[in-house]
Amino acid sequence: MGSSKKDFYTVNKLLADFINGLTEEQFSKLVDGLAEVKYVEKALDSLTRSKYDEILLATAKIKDRKHRIEELSSLNDLNTKAKLIDLCKYINIDCKSKDRVDDIIAKIENYVNESSETIIDKNEKSTGLEERLDEIGNELEKFMNVDEARHFLVTNKDVASKTNLVKLARKLRVYIEKEASYDLIIETILKSVVEAKIRSYTIRKKM
Image (spheres, rainbow, N blue to C red):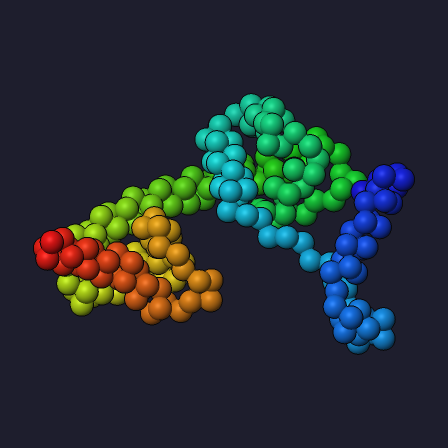
């Protein structure tokens, strides 16, 4: 951040908004030294992570290092030092705001050069998983028995982890609470997909 008057006003507004958002009790504890203000960086959202993964994959596929640097230098998604630094943080490269843009790009290129096989392999595995999750979703929607559907899910190695199970839920457009356990996610998917289908079929049959 620069030391301009605009930056000063921006920081003061942030502080004022923060203080206005406190309750009287919270404000008192802060003044009395019983609470503290912490700086916490926001985690990258899934869209940004996906965008960075695409950039890394595209540059990893470029064999010539000079062309790779040219590609990184020309991307709109990396057209500021701040964006380049964010990418460095994502891939755990030591980078500082005082570093020159060219030096930051060189660090990123060097990382891609050393990790190109890993980057490409990770993408291929991710693509394969997405396709398998699509297949699992399609198969699940065919079940007319909840117990059979449950057995199908809990014995499938591709959704053995909570992370992949949540990905499946998203594909099926099933809302999952962030703190939900693995078992609860299974039951939520079954209710939203299989049980809902059975109820709909029963209602149509009675009509």
